[in-house]
Image 1 (tube, rainbow, N blue to C red):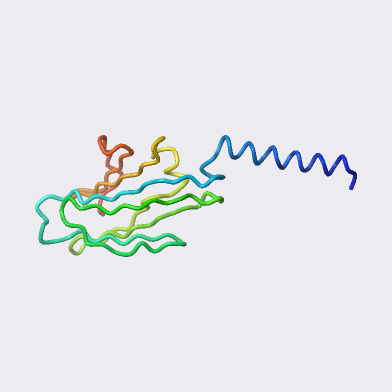
Image 2: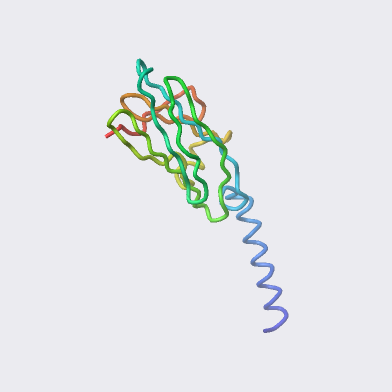
Length: 141
């Protein structure tokens, strides 16, 4: 292989790495995000909301959240852009799995502050990136 071809390949690879790190840092650098799940139920003090969250690399364990309690963690996205945290929620006899964090969906909607918050209520799961404006994402069933 000619020296010129080798130089061209090295420069091309360096250009791609620089481009990715500038224009898509969530996939390249491993940005940190804060994820929080809040029990927004009312009048359920005797019946906790049970949550268990994990990813391919981390098992965050289970928690029983009373009314108003929360469970939060900080994560760092991986190089491949495949970071995914799945949570299972249980309330009485109802059980629901949901993606608490998934790179393709959340890198943009978790805003500049990299905050992904979930408020779980009797009628469903609400998302917010500022904990002021909540939008219903889905129902229990």
